[in-house]
Length: 316
Length: 316
Image 1 (cartoon, rainbow over the protein chains, first blue to last red):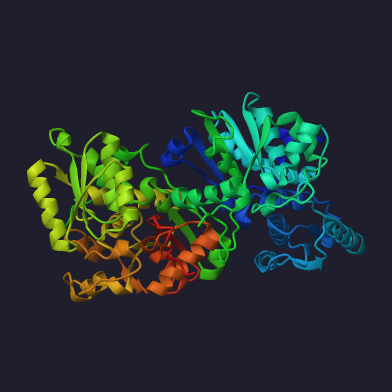
Image 2: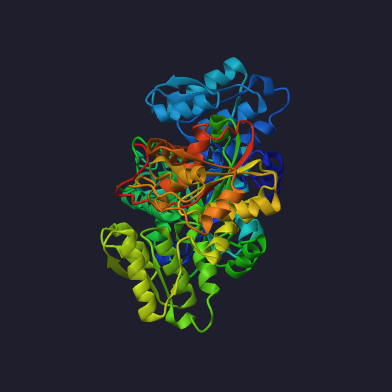
C-alpha cells in the first residue's frame, strides 16, 4: 500500500508553511441546529488559488530534484489542480505546462493563465489528456505533477486535515469529498495516526460514485459516463489512493446534484461562503442526514470555492 | 464629547467574549495586486447574526441594570441591528421587541423572528419609528438599545477593530463603513489609543453622504432623500458618534452604488465571501483608489454579509 504517513504530511507542512494560508475553521449555530450536530468547517475555499490543491501542488514542486527544477512541471487537469500547479511553479520560478481538453471552459483556462501556466489543448478524453501530458514530459523533461495519484501530492493535501485536528482535537468524525481520492486518503491517514477512533467519511456525487462501487467490489470500478455538477469529483479513484481509502476510511456515501446545489445555497446564505459544487458534498451529506451523525462533533472539509459567477451553480 | 474609551472597549470584550466569533482576518494576493496595496480583511460578515452588530447589541444587553433585565429590550431598525438585538436578548433569556417599518422586506423580518424577536410595525418614517419605540419603552419598561447612538453599543462595536489591531499590529490605515457612525467612531477610538499614527478612514455611499457634508459644515447635516444599495448606511450620523468622528477620523470619502456592486462581485469572486452592500464600501473605496493608499498595509472592515439571495445585489 501507498506509504504516505503522518510524518510525510508533517514534512509537507514544513515545506509549504508560510506560502499557503492556514485557513480558518468556521462554525454556525444555525447550521448546527439545522443539522442536529456540531459542525466545524475547514475553509479550503479560502485557500490560495481557491482550493486545497495549492497544498499538494506546492509540496510536490518543492520536493523536485534540484536537477529537474529548471525543466519545470507538467500536469493534466481541467480544474483547480491546473491552477494550483501553475501557481506553485510560478512561486518557485519554474515553467508550468497544463494539458486541458479543448472543451474546457474559459473561466478555468483564465485561472491557469492568471498564474502564468502555459496551456496545451487536446481532445476531451482521458486517454488524450494522459498521452499529451506524457508526450510533453518526454519532449521537455518536465516533471509530471499528477492531480492525486502521487505520494507527494497526497502528503500536501493531508496538511488541511492536520490543521483541522490541531484546531479542533475533539472531533467525532471528519468528512471529505472524494474524486480521485487524494484528499480523502490523506485525511484518513492523518486521522488514523492522530485519533484512531475518529470516524472518517467520504462523499462523492451520485453521478460519479466509482469509489462506492469500488469499495463494494473490492477492486477499482470505473463508472461508464461520470456526470455531476461537482465537476471536480468526476475522476476515477487512483490506484495509489484506493488502497488507502479501503484501509483507512470508514464509509463513503453519495449525494445527488440537487442536494449539492441546495447545500451550496445554504452555505452562501448562512455561512456567507462561496463553496464550489465539489467542495459542498460533505456538507450536503451531513445536511441530508446521510451519515447518521446526530449530536456529534463533525469536521467538514470545504475543499474549494472556484465558481464561474456568470453561471452560478447553486440552487436559485 | 462622548466618553467611549479603549478601556470601555476592553470591558466590552470581556463581556461578550465566547459568545461572539473572533472573526478571521483574510488576505488575498490577487486583491493586493489589483489594489496595489496589502489588504487585511476583518470578516465581520462571518460574525454571529451575519454582522458586527452582534457585538454592540450583546455588550448593551449584558450591561443592563439587573432590575431592568426582566422587562427586556426594544429597538427600531430595519436591518442587522434588529436581528442582533433579538439574538442578544435571546442569548440572555430576555424578551426583545423590534419596531420595523411596515414596508421592511420579508427577508429582514424573517431574521428577527428567527432569533425570537417580536416585531411591531409602524409607518415608514424615521419619526414614526422613534415614536413607536418610545411608546413601547414607556408602556413595557423595556430598555432602548439604539443602533449606534449609545456608548455601550459603540464600545461593543469597537471590539472588532481591537481584534484586528491585535492580529495585524503594523497596519498603516484602517477603513470602516459609516452609516450612523457607531462602528467608525469606535474603530477610531481603538486606533487613536493603540496606534496614534494609524490613518483612520470612513466610507459612505454617495447617496447618503451626510457625514462628509457634516464634517465640511462642522455640524450635522441631514441628506434630504438618502438612497443607496447599501441600505445599512442610510442613517444620519448620531449626535454622540459625530464628535468622535470629527476628532478621531482622518477622512471620510464616498463611493457610488455601481462601485459598491462591483466591489461585492469581486469579493464574491476572489475572496469567496458574501459581503452585503454596506459591508463592501471600504473595499470599494480602496479598489477605486479613492484613498491614496498605494503600497500601504490597509485593514478593511467587512461589516456584514446579510444578503437576500433571491435578489442578489452584486454586479451581475
